[in-house]
Image (tube, rainbow, N blue to C red; front, side, top):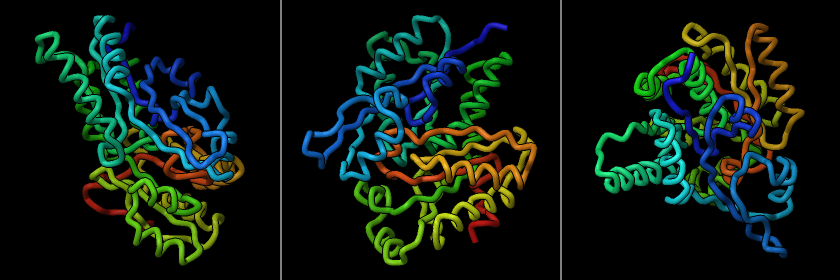
Length: 307
């Protein structure tokens, strides 16, 4: 069966090159630059860890680098959208949450300019504000690929994703809130309180697409158990099956431990694993571990394990 639309995502989906090629997804990269290093640090695009390994990237942060990110340029969006239109097929575009980055607004602005240039108000490019990024965003994309391969239309997938994004449950642990606070993603007061407790912060993504501070755990082992408990108590496999998205920022041993816990909780679970890429890694720092899965509608505000 021939597909009826293109799939595009910005690089915050954290698919590897092999995965994006296998799944037939075009990637529009963010870029980043490092500061705080005598040699000036690395400057380049988020190329899905082709230029550097995850360990090299995160070790640079441990060694004092303070990387900063930039959303795709107007030219990058323009080139991607023109290439998509040249295929003669509609396109569905997944974007990082507008509550975390200006990437979504950049994509919409580029599309508006293209419409004006071509004199068309109805170019078949559907841009989704995912309300998330990286590990939870992966769940939306996995299902969109399945729908595309089974013959769904672009508008059908767009409408589905705009509703389905509220059913993705996410909890993640970071080593500290310092990098998030420096980037303005977490209030300074929250970062200060979490730091004084000498504990590992837990965060989620709200329905408005911004980060929320859930609490802390004493030590990373307890944090991993909290993530597994969250999955055990809040999952709902009825719509999409037992799929779990897990990711780590240069902490493979802890990701493996979390996977063991998840498998123990549900031996039938299909677990997909991502390396947290440079764009998100610039803000969360090394040591982030995340767990996402399908659950109840987050707009209802019900979650057992966040009490």
